[in-house]
Length: 117
Image (cartoon, rainbow, N blue to C red):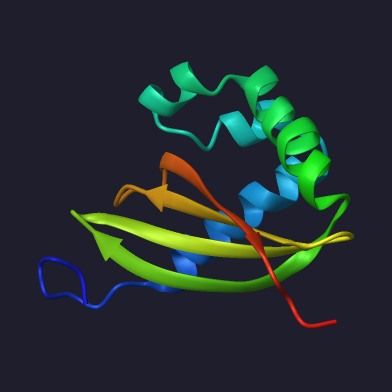
């Protein structure tokens, strides 16, 4: 349930999360940046998204392989899709924070995650 008591359409937010990860993994950083709200777009231009994906995450976890799981929660009226990704070396997690319209209002890493083989 949302803060207003209405059922949340998690598939909407999770599909947005999948699309964002797909764009990042395909190197389409301009398109990925287009999914950010205006505040996040100012903080994370395409060059910063590329660094986050290639250097920061890729340097730790290795090459991206797939989404392993998505978990959901609501915090202060924002809809969070916690995306657990499988990479060649280890799993890695992101909290993608969405506003009601589906724009990304925050990106927080949850760090490395142990995943079964």
